[in-house]
Length: 253
Ligand SMILES: [Zn+2]
Ligand SMILES: [Zn+2]
Image (tube, protein in one colour):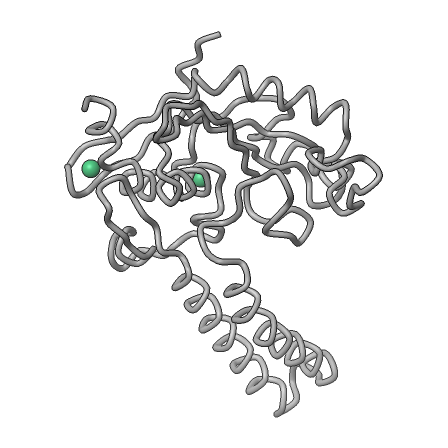
């Protein structure tokens, strides 16, 4: 079941070329995962049904939040065993970590520590804005304050993303994205960067990585239930160029 239209690709500025990771070796495992999702109707299927967390039901993917990208990576351990690793894009119903799935590229505890109190302050400003009409003198300063706090928070969150590659290098989002260009929302939260970061940190050699969409289709219809998609252009193309750097050397060596 070969499909050229899957797998990972990114442009590496250091090498001046694209780096690839094929999707084909991971497609079988993706299809297996789809069967499990359909049967179990939950994503925490590695734990007994009696202990299932209702937040992790796949009903969530049919709701207003719509479906999500899921990814599977086939990798080889240092001792030569094959591993199958799974990731979902972004958070699942508010969680970064779900049993049986690779977590985000950063330490979730650091995220919550940074995010939660600031997010509360931003919400409080929003509440105060609602109490004041747009024309009143109090409204504008509140709006400006909220905007500034949101901007600062986004910058701090971006700072948590320290991406690693197969050349033992590490870089932040600002360094990877071309200077002056904005970093799209959700950059670093796709399945591919999560899985590749996990591979580097755990001394795994990725052999293939494929991503598919599961759940209610997105509003534009560009993502459809059960279909495979290549790594995304806007967020992952620059990131994966950096993250896949050095992998080819391992393969040949
Ligand atoms: Zn992506
Ligand atoms: Zn490179």
